[in-house]
Length: 265
Image (cartoon, rainbow, N blue to C red):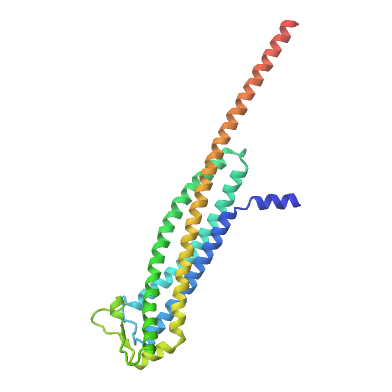
C-alpha cells in the first residue's frame, strides 16, 4: 500500500497543479469581484449621477456593463474547462515521461498535444495581459473619485467636481458630474458602496494579474514537458535500434554456433 501511494504521488504533475490552483484563484477573484464591482458601479451611476438606461437599442454605459458581465460568465466557464484540460495533459505527459520504455505512439501524441497547448496558452497569456490593462482603468477612475472625496474633507471650501465626460462614459452633449458642494456627492463619499466597489475592482485587478502569472507558469511547464517528451521519443528510438541490433547479433551468433556444431558432427 505504501509503495502504491508513493507511485501515485510520483505521477502527480505538481507544477501543473500549482499553476491550476493559481489560475482558478485568479479567475475566481476576477470574475466574482469584477461582477460585483460592475453591479456596484450601476448603482452608483443611477443613485448619485442620476443616469438612466437609454430606451431602445442604444448602446450606453449600462449596456456595456451588461456585456462585460456576460463576458465574465464566459471567461469563468472557459477557463474552468481549460484548467481541467491542462491538468489532464499534465498527467498524461508526466506518465509518458516516467515510462520511457512505453509505446512510442503515446509519447508522440503527448508531444503534439504539448505543442498545441503551448501555442494556446501563449495566446491566452496575451489576452489576460489585455484584460489586466483594461481592469486597471476602473481602478484609476475610482482612485480619482476616492481622492476627490478625501480632499473634500481635508480642504474646507474646495469646489472639486468629477465629470463623467472625461472618461467617455457619457457623450459630450450630456453633463453628468457631481461636485463637492452637492448633497449627492456628500452622500456618495459617506456611503460604503463607493469604498466597497473601489476595493472590489482592486481585487479583480489582482486576480487578473494572478491569471497572467498562472499562464506564464503554464508556459514554463508545457515547454519543459514538450522537451522531456521529445527526449523520451529519442530515447525510445535509441532503445528500439539497440534491441534490434542485439537481436541481430544474437541470431548471427546462434547461426554460427549451429554451423560449427554441424561441421564438427
